[in-house]
Image (tube, rainbow, N blue to C red; front, side, top):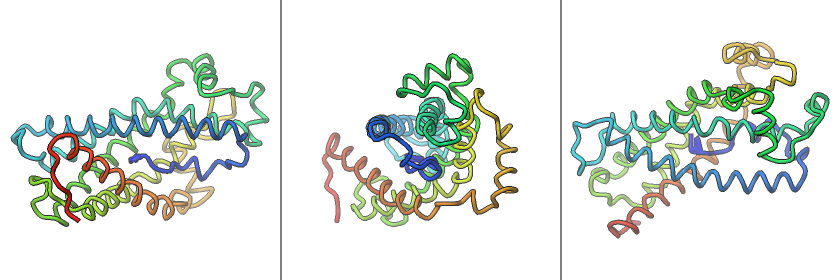
Length: 267
């Protein structure tokens, strides 16, 4: 995403949940945990992508950069694998941040004390299946968007600086622009799915179920709130995604050069 922050970028939950309702100490705890998790997630995503992009297209020599086919398939596989880890983590995050809004207070007698408390409560009331509530929609969001994410980056860096995929001599500006565009494209490709995912994961068995599934959630949002609700906040999200993902890819490329071949960076 990465993204997806994401790619890894601002989730719809940050638009739909009022942080003013979260206690100050809880806000800082969640923020610290989130930043630590995002750093670990980004490292995992890039490593898995590096392996899969080569492994999924064996027609390309190991000494050559992966083909665009390998890039797209590697990104798709990376997003799918990430979903297995991200689903319970985001579920806990959403439940913890939602607990202090007025609607949740009416239906929750025992407030959560932290991420462990949330996970324990979900496991007790909903079982292991409950920990993966939203897995399908997360897969639908992350797998294709990561394919677009890495494909856009590799394609744009080659267009902006021909031959750089093999030489590794692209400029810093190329990294920033290609990475930024990759973040924008990935978010545009999955934004409505992220809205639906957040709505579905906000539900629990202990509270009334507003949506029965992915299709129902899509239909109800469009019917009750209009198509624009699926794209609400997109402008802010892609603006931040451009800046953050430009920095992420630039940091990644520069780190690789410093660690392995010490090639210079053109300005």
